[in-house]
Length: 437
Image (cartoon, rainbow, N blue to C red; front, side):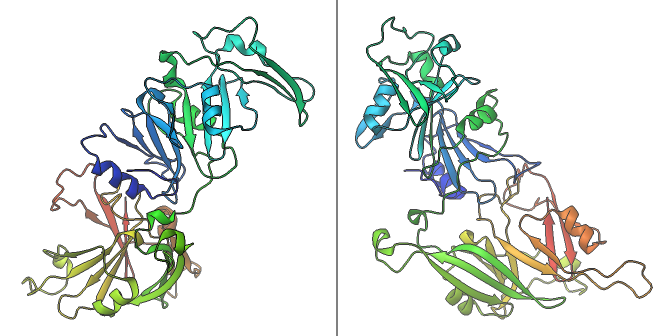
């Protein structure tokens, strides 16, 4: 079991679900008002770990360990943190090697030690701030562990003073250990790339008031999906909805998967694949284009038959069925009699939706030509409206001037009778149905 930066949110949840007896008290934090502006967070308070995901791509970008006394950490076989071993700056440098001089934030009283893709934040008592100061050239950094119970030696073991890149460096070399009651305040962040991220902003927004409520977006770079997370599946890069003036014809899917190598080391990078599926395509043709579905679901009953103009109420002799492609964010519905495509379902995978975490987000682009206005209408003719997975319904409905009342979808007949997210509304326009939360 391991987490790797770049993995999708659903893969991280699957790891936690596989350890349901070991990992307890897991929390998923998100903003229901601004889901694209606030990071998606998995908080494991009993393990002192937070997984911070990009709200748009929904991939892991930062692993935060905010309670060091709850975990045991190793690097290259060397243990540098455990409930028995309290970390110090000297231990960290001994384990990870030399790095650039640390940075001190006087406002938050934190000392940062940064490596490639890794940052440590040590708390410093404000009464020791007099040992670090500004000058006309640059900063002077105090590279030592100082805390309420740590004894500041009257004569340091060794003093090194020098001028490095227009900065004066003052270094106190000491092996003072963290006291047990302060280990919980030491933080570690794992991310991607060389650039040091402002993880202090994460601490300020996520844990300063200890209410586990997210408050913004971390500025960490977003990694690509690692090859170890491909798992022989097709992943979607973009989906173009193919339409005429008023009718949908099919989908053009731009996807990527592993390279042709027999292993990750031989495969190098992933390869791109582009396929088109259309209404009326057979199940065999869809499988040839997209591969075998992750799951096949047979509809037990058609709940929308009551809205049909026909008076017949007898169920069909066979059930229509779905091909579920979870990593593409796509469902394909086939007619039970002809076994041809009759519907596509594109999932946006927003937190708070009934099906959240079942699918990856479908990055679709849908261009709709609004219905023509009446001849005596005073409203000017409108241009095409581009709709994506990030469009707001208020903007779309205003542009298309949707006038019909919605159908309320409450999922009361679902196997999950305790849906905590409430009803959604389905708006019909031309041959499209928009589900709005």
